[in-house]
Length: 447
Image (cartoon, one colour):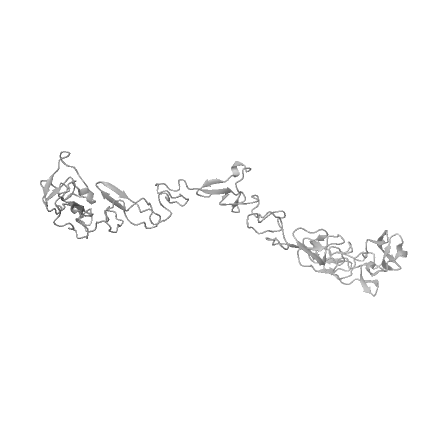
């Protein structure tokens, strides 16, 4: 580099290897890099900053260029050639001697040498702008890698050369780090959070129709009452969310947010998992036939939740009935276009199903219209003693099937009572009636 000293325009020629009265004013002075020792004079050689101990560095004088004749301070060269153009034996002649070596006193500095990252700003390849390797491959060298010349410092720009996502101009994301190397952390980076009233982890997607308080917000950390994932179709129910499990209960809720409610059956992508079994209730007494079932969420028409009706053609027969005071008969019969009421009557000492209009003259002989005594479908035929079939005066009696007739016998035993949600309870005969041996909620009478 050309340097001007003394009077402007004055060309100074000095003998080769002679300082010519130009002294090194920085010799022995403390320094950090070579540039701290440079006195601006070419012909007295390049001063160096060398280590004197573990923690100290000092300037040392340089060697004058090996000019064969005079040294030209203005042009920084030896006009008459050099006695030795490569004094540092790095294989490249110095610039003063017509070569390209920018520092012929430093064998580790010459064009084409591998540039390394160093904190003392040493230029290995005579190119101040190459300061080291790009370790993370993002196109930027680390900012700790520097070169310096004449007080001008050249450094890399990567604030984190071990992280490929950090470099000048990189997008700044929410990660607690300086991604764009501007010295600030997460100053522009944001995440979108969505209003989540039911706390199921899914928020309301952005919609111009939403009230302002429920619109999405931008932040780096999730605020309370917000979720990172949008798409909740029902933010009032924690059961409803995209990808949720469809269920029958609670009824009418689209748990998986697919636009369908309580869906099931062939072809359904996400059927309800808690389908209910319902039973055919032809006589509409609230109890169904266990041989005719449907599985669904809501009960189909004509089906009920409770099974066990042993005569689904007789509304007076079902598991909820109690003592057989009198037998059950079909409620009516249709003859041609005429519908007649059917009732139970005692005819000649026996219970019969008869046409109401004809009385005992209209006894029905069809097997489907015979009296039914097992009113509660428990397989037993018993009564509390009132209206015994034979009109007897016995205080308590029960009915015993003898062929086609039902006759009364003195009662000596009882059936069982039961509770709706507990095991059956024992009953005992106290001489006049069946009594319960225990108490409980939802109990049914002893039989």
